[in-house]
Image (cartoon, rainbow, N blue to C red):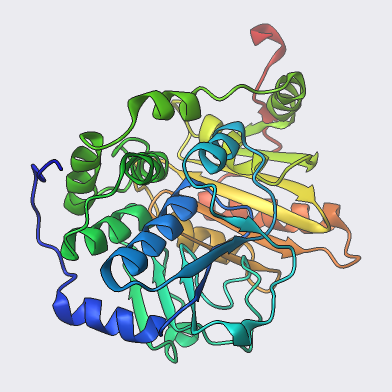
Length: 350
């Protein structure tokens, strides 16, 4: 077993661990995350499962809803976190000693937990929904930290548990993707977790995840997204229309924010009677979570932190085009941009 090389102040102490254990009950604990889970949420749930089992012998079941369509995320699920179960509808909740939410919060609009059900545990790094969290017995919500994987790493560290290679790889990749390799919204705790996990992970599996193969249709979708993007001064906006999977908005927002003149990039698309949006901002210019909540105020739900945010708007028969125009109008107003904009791919560039 390798020793930890780097240390930082860890807020998880014996009292916090005891309180977590008490609220998990005797098991099994039901662990849920947000719809269409990303690497950070998949890794965080696995880490909570490992903590409960190894430290206290408490069993748990991990369930997700929605799709895992992005090639890297599918590879991570199959290679590193296969215990997650897909459930479009949750089973009876009375068979569990407790419910935990990781990388999401109650009534955030992006998970399947019924709004009237209060979870026993919430561990997340997005902006806290204070009213929704007030009645939760155990909460650890720290938006200043770059990933929920970092928080769960601290729990493992506090309990004296070294993650096995699969879990270490999952936590590392979850942290890596949410912080862009510590380049986006990371703090000292993220750096400690990142470099310590680097010494524990399975490098071969990490490569398999990062270089997961994509189908030919992916490149067609990518091309259509590039064609849809418009540039308004320092803002990139793209409506992708009907999408074959909801992860596409996040994937393209990550691409568009790399434009050297952009301060923010917003992508929207339709999938399964919902309008999905992903927002990215440059170098903490403005908090993306706060901006995203303003964009969908009165229309849907959004959340995030630092430079990354996402949201959903249920269509329910509403004209998607009208909603897109309203969100676009709000976005350009927040950005201080006017005019008709121009195609990102101008004729002289293609």
